[in-house]
Amino acid sequence: MSKSTQIGLIFLILLAVFVSITGGALVGGVTGYFLAQQSIAEMPTPEVQTVVQPAEPAQPETPAEPAPEIFPDPTQPPEAVIPPVVGDAEEQSDAMVLAVERVSPAVVTVLNINSEAGGSGSGVIVSENGYILTNHHVVEGATELAVIFADGTRQDVTLVGSDPLSDVAVVKATEAVPAVAVVGESDALQPGETVLAIGSPLGNFRNTVTSGVVSALNRSVGNLEGLIQTDASINRGNSGGPLINLEGEVVGLNTLVVRGGFLGSDQAEGLGFAVPSTIFRRVSEQLVATGEMAYPYLGIQYQVIDWDVVVEENLPVENGALVISVEPGTPADQAGLQDGDIITALDSTSLAQDNSLRYVLIQYQPGDTVELTVLRDGRELQLELTLGTRPKDLQP
Image 1: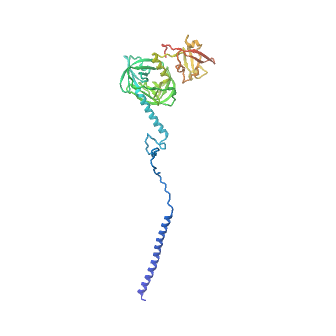
Image 2 (image 1 turned 60 degrees about the vertical axis):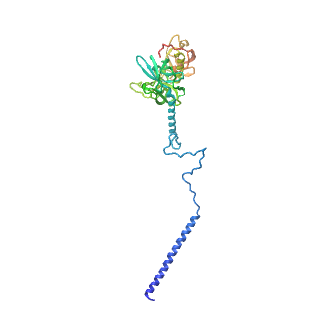
């Protein structure tokens, strides 16, 4: 065997070995692939739950709710997205708008046409017969009166009656009125409750609306008692305009604002006051009926008891009315009331800082019989008397 033959034989043997090795690997790899595929095919298919729930067929009776949006429609706030307080604020805002829409057409600007000095205020129509409520100080001294309605039309009015003690006046339109406001119950008001003031500040900005809360009830400012205190902005020209609740009911007549402080140069902000409906309702009814207001009368001069009076006079009680003097021949004199007596209650109503003697008295009529609870020299007395009629020339 030649050398070349030997080399060829060796090459053939190596080639056979290579084919044997690679062929086995290839066959094994193919076999393993098909076995793996068979095993995967026999495995159970896993249950897949989608993140988005598939939509069910539409049910007209119970439609599916839309998914919350990133910026939801403020008129339909999803509870899961917007806290309830936001919804409450929106509901309150809507209520304020509706209340104003209900009352504004009945709000008027009152013109006091006087030969010496003219002026203007506000008022509110409370009767289809044309009766309009405003303040006494708005119409005081007028030789001629007129109103401007919300739509800008003007009409002459006549004075029905005016009461300086309550600062309430009634005027009457001679022609048809555009709207009538509903009078609510001021007794239902609570401190913190939202109220709105509507009027014509400075006489030019008709039907201006300001909002605030009831700051306090039964306040006394000067000679006026039983007032509603509010932080709703009240300016010159607002006098006589309505203070309304969120039901669109008139619960007060805006009457004054305190700007200067009581102590030196201190300034006050947000101190507005309104005559409550419990007072202006009764006063206006009597003004319409008789043209004047008849108040019940005791016949005494007295001082409202506060802490300063308690300390100064060394009094045994913190509330009530300290009698300064008794007018001869008056109901108080006839009942035996004396200087220095302390009136603590009228019938079953106790006197307090927010429940003054005058405020309690206005709930009665001249001729009514009442019982006074009085402290005298440490003893409690019950005195019965019949209320008289307050003299017309008696200063507030």
